[in-house]
Amino acid sequence: MSTISDLQLVPPSVALPPETEELRAEVRDFLAKELLDGRFVPRCDVWLSGWDERFSRELGARGWLGMTLPTEYGGHGRDALARYVVTEELLAAGAPVAAHWIADRQIGPSLLRFGTETQKQRYLPRIAKGECYFGIGMSEPDSGSDLASVRTKAVRVDGGWQLTGTKVWTSGAHHAHAFFALARSAPVEDGNRHAGLSQFIVELDSPGVEIRPIKLLTGAHHFNEVVLDGVFIPDDLVLGEIGSGWHQVTSELAFERSGPERFLSTFPLLVALVGELSSAGERLGTAGLRDLGALVSRVWTLRRLSLGIASSLSSGAPADVPAALVKDLGTRYESEVIEAARLLVDVPPDPGAEGGFARLLAEAILHAPGFTLRGGTNEILRGVVARGMGLR
Ligand SMILES: Cc1cc2nc3c(=O)[nH]c(=O)nc-3n(C[C@H](O)[C@H](O)[C@H](O)COP(=O)(O)OP(=O)(O)OC[C@H]3O[C@@H](n4cnc5c(N)ncnc54)[C@H](O)[C@@H]3O)c2cc1C
Image 1 (cartoon, rainbow, N blue to C red):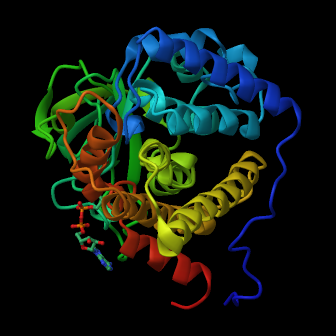
Image 2: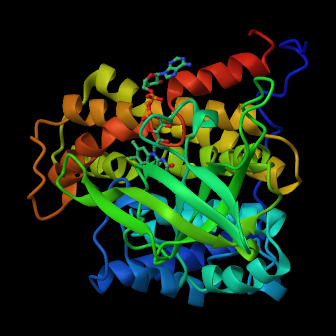
């Protein structure tokens, strides 16, 4: 059993190479111009709700998607830290990044690692151009935290597999071209539920796929229930090895849990809060200054941890335990920004406001319930951390 002292809960810290500052300046210039031209309005939780295909294609044209993918697949052969700089700038600005987010963050790396040559050629160049969007087909109505209990069934048929089951909370499925579905391809034997699972690339316009909207608290249509009714998946759309779905999905989750989107969903509100306090000349008092200072210093700490993981992941080192830590600490932090904004400024949240603090506050409040759930709940993540520390 590993002990706490053996464990690398916090990966070594990483200094950003000087050339990334040039890249950061380019991204900032681009964002400033987009804002000036009225092409987007800063929002909270943009990586989930800011679907804008034009914006994604613009990023693709600038080489800011598929950055770590090899050039032979349309990528840019850059390192994880360069990608990190781009993504953190986009999130901090509240720019509309949802369309490409899942494809760029986890589908590209998974295809690169587990996909066939044909699959790589088919999807990666379009992902890097910001033209191909993916969803995540993991959760089911009775299977969220306990993902190994998925009941979507894959049955072997001539030339491929037939998928039947229901996926739920599928972000962006109504716009996306495809998702990776986790399905049971062989019955559980000897109580080993992690065996017999497989991943399939499901093109969402295939016969037998029905996408039903589930509305958010805001009334917005963001996620869906996706019913798979005997959907035929040809052999060339099996991802990786049949039976290796659990291993593949868990390696995908490390990409999903550790990025800056796990603590920057409410960053535009933090910026607006600081602006509100300075423009209103509000007297914060010592307690208010302390609260604001704590928020700023914590975002810095979370970023440092998350950057270290980005670097570990790119070198192939396992990072699932620290990734769970970032997501737990980061998503709680996102809600604390909302709390501070409510307490420090006397402006009521208003989803209909033109822009600025009142609208950002309203959006953040309405989106907050999902922060600690999506990508694995915080209770589950604390279990991952405890196991990693040898405590369970
Ligand atoms: C905004 C949003 C977007 C999402 N997008 C996607 C998506 O695109 N694709 C996708 O596949 N899924 C998506 N999800 C689903 C998400 O991954 C699940 O909601 C999550 O994994 C939890 O599963 P569940 O909702 O079934 O809750 P449950 O697993 O039923 O959990 C209910 C409660 O019980 C607690 N609990 C459960 N088991 C334990 C345990 N062993 N120990 C302690 N506590 C426990 C949980 O922490 C939680 O508080 C999304 C969710 C949200 C909120």
